[in-house]
Length: 357
Image (cartoon, rainbow, N blue to C red; front, side, top):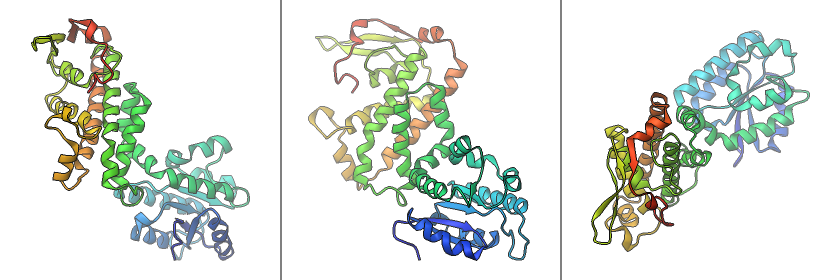
């Protein structure tokens, strides 16, 4: 029976003495080990309740089929292959670990490198791919608990690996990565991990703004935008869209501050950015008279407090980041990139405190 708040671990082990004692040890780490004597039985349990499992422990010298002999090479080869296929089908990684009483030469060559996604630091520090029944059980229990607690973010980092890699390549600040992960985790793990209500998730428009600002800072460092102190979202969107950045003079007349020579962003993302920079700043705080027709509370009331707009902005940010990566690769000359715009009134580039609204 599932212990409340315990981490459920699928465990392939056929030694009755071990299956009677290890679960008692693991309970002190809030782990519930559920043993299966062969991979056939464990695989059926994994497929039958995939979302219920947080980790998998494999005893290397175990049976593949119910009537098989113990064979570490065959067992690990087939079990690890099945785990990879099932996780790919389900779209979620379940960390697995090899716990064995055998010698290193019996198991190491059969343990593939997929485990490095979550367990690389163990190998780096201990110089082995497995956990020893005699020496490492406590380490393993602690690590399973730790990985289960950080698992949602680990899963997001795997699912959106191309986006996060693009952020690093484009030198988009790490604060933007953290903010983007904060937006993505509840989308995929809302029921299993996140207890936040829609109200709390809809407070995260400020994270969209954070990501946008750091994307535009990255564009500045690559010559696509002026290198101003405080990012102006509206002007940034205009400049890369081939539109001039204006200010109003004392007579209410439009005066060009930055002239855009050509559009560099795709037409689709141009429209996406235009709407985001209009809506997001207004949604970052409570409604007030300054926001005109764009009122957060009024909109959310009209859509039953839906989170779908914020989620759609999150995915759009991912596409903008991937576009940046592609554009920077094709246009690496920063000085040449600056020829797409020209500053006309530099004194207006030092914006006021709220100038990036």
